[in-house]
Amino acid sequence: MKKQLVIAAATLAASAAPAFAHLDPAAHGSLMAGLSHPLFGADHALAMLAVGLWASQAGARALWAIPAAFVATMALGFALAITGAPLPFVEPAILASVVSLGLIVAMAVRLDAVKAAAIVGAFALFHGHAHGAEIGAAGIASFAAGFVIATALLHAAGIGLGILLGKLSGGGSVARLLGGLTAAAGAILMLG
Image 1 (cartoon, helix red, strand yellow):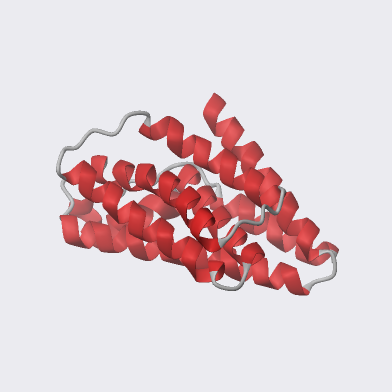
Image 2 (cartoon, helix red, strand yellow):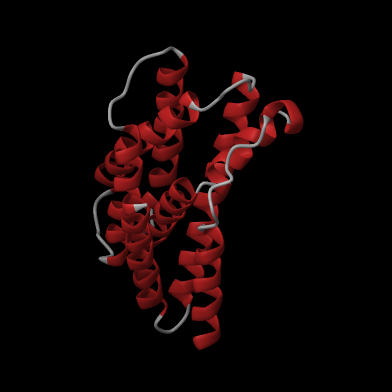
């Protein structure tokens, strides 16, 4: 059990690498710039992993509904930013998503799939808007494809970790601990 806890903690720590999220599209291509944005931005990565963990805790229909709602609404937020539609409090809402989603996982909150999807969708709108606001010189379609793929991979990693922990004795407690650590990391990011 201790070995699994160390692996889970190392996975979480690795996901919270310093923010070097923004590759230059001219040097690395628009797809890679889009892929890197959520993967290496601690705020995005932590929130998206927490979405996957929560989906694994919820199970059944929510296992896919929660991440799908995030990705779909994130794309809407991206479109709003690309068209120049303002959205207030984007960065504070993203940081609030890390804390809130971490707490949801820590408390193993049980909601029906529709309510859970609405919660993650509300946060995803801000994540998507941030991606659109920070597109720079990247091509819209390939940058969007990159961050959608990266987001789906982060959700899948969270789901996989949650399912693995669910099969271990005491794994539910470890998942809840990871949620608490995510919330704490979000609080630290808010102060930074």
